[in-house]
Length: 370
Image (cartoon, rainbow, N blue to C red):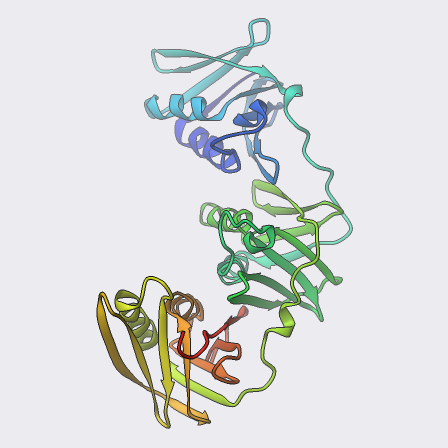
């Protein structure tokens, strides 16, 4: 196999395909990327046990073939090369890859492409097509409450559900809940994937001219296509939480506040709140919300946010990080807090939101005196 690419294209190709490769791979071959060349294109693939990426771009390949090479080693080699064309040529008799640029020649070990795990069989039953900005926003909101490296797999996951012509992405750590909704036309589905997979895919969108993301769901994997990038994600087995039961259907009190003021108050509360409970108190009055936080070893803060209040006055105690997460996630200049009681779920949503993605955040209050 032999082909040539400019250094910047080659670097992007290898870095993108290497995103799923773990720092510590359980299988040695998963430290590698697969490189396949045909007469008109080059494809680079990387994967782990949970997900994978392959990137295909046009390329004049002088001779076809396939090989695997160590991802980190290849990236380190490319990083040292000067700008300009890079020629890569594989010697299958020695399984050695020549990387040449200018007067420099470097040789790294390679292995047969057949050693690499196969790409999962894709489903062609139906697909969901989203504008890439809608997909990015859905992932931003829908994975917001996922907990990285969680002991419980569902805490690190995102539930993707299509119901009533609406796609929903949901995440929760059982103390907070994030739901993103957008209109689609698709059969009903309900699958669970790692939230980090969706976040990594969304991070690739800025590099793409393609305006749409295509999503397909099979028996054991979900598949994503965005321009030259394709990806799969292994579905997590099990039943997701009955998240709809947590979202309040009626409210005793609704509070409308300026989003930036809420973010600023919660940020100040986070500085002085106790490291143990991270609590901030919201005292809802007739025309304002008073924010309080403090600890014996730091001090205390108190400030008043003007608000439009409908319903009962009450005091709610929540963790400041959940208030910040929701306030930063609503995406509008005004935010509405919907309270059902002092210790009942608190819904936080955007006000006057005309965007195609509708976010809802739910926070579980702490008990009074906690």
